[in-house]
Image (cartoon, rainbow, N blue to C red; front, side, top):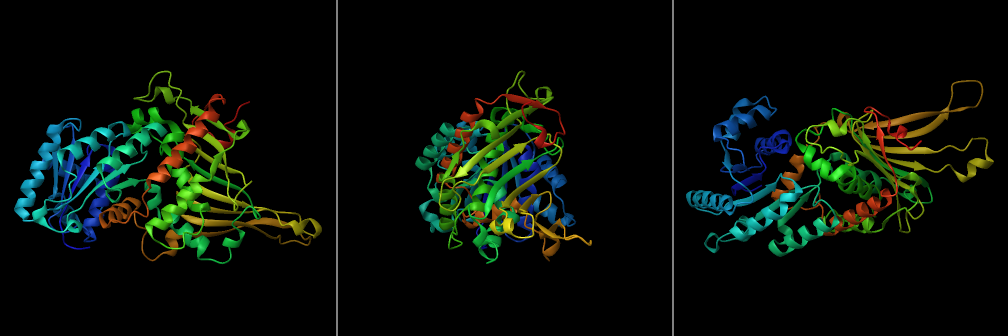
Length: 469
């Protein structure tokens, strides 16, 4: 990392995302020496907060034993009250940056982070562009590569397919593609990145990765009541539901990484093209027997939820991948809140051997699971002989835990993503074409679910129990 200063702007800095994730991530970058001396971070929100109070809030949210370094970090933080729908807010920021750049005698890089609801994206995009804040640098400051401007947008990108397409067209008119970074923080998880290494770096598994040997693929994410607490996201969540909030992004990206073709290189272009190709081949099954959507009992009593809301907090859908590798293999995706356990995983079930019918062994299937959370790892179910006189088989599990096997701790997803955005590496960010395909799939799932009754389930339910009587 060079020593060119960076100016960071967080729209929605008074919200949970900044407090719980981004503040720590920026501090970790600072601790690692990745934020050059002279950086500054401006939090922007309608709330009126003094700089010192903002710094105190951030200081209390940072986990570190180096309190001196944390205090040094927050001295670079500022808070500006403003309405993101008001042109005056952007003029105020522009004046701040002009004074700062004049003081430094150079044009700082600018990183704008939209930690706001999707409904506000269009207003921020238009106002940023109209204000001139997205112009990389005044000519007198020289090299554009030293003074870039980038925009980071949180998932979900849009609230439906039409809204996402409108936003994407708008972005294309206002910004260059290399300025746009669409975040799905699951792509920053170490275990997801390691799936490609597991598949293509081991000759043992990739030959089995096809319809010839695989009988079923499941991608699921479950949350308990505590983990799935709606908190400040209640209004946004109620407008989206489980499918749009998690299925359209996290689950489909997990599926793409587990089933995509070999990208042949680690370049952002090749990896994003491979993910897009896989997503474009996904079709939604029309048989409703493996589809379900439901709402947990008590959801409508949550603060911020509309009375009579029919928003689903759980869904299950069946897909298929229409390509030569996977055609005919059932694919299931599932997500729910207020369930029995917290987990995120991708499971691959292998077919029983054709030869086992004619042998002394009872046909048995094996399952390989990538555990994304709460523990990152890989497990394989296999069969071994019981310790007995009779020749009987019993199921065993071979497990690998990523954290315990690595000498260095995992990089926190937001640290990895912010570092890549600052470096200009878009590998772990979602492309325009991926967004379009993900919303196409989500829209097709919604059409099927229109013919499926919305069920109600008690908090703490097992996902298998959520079905129509």
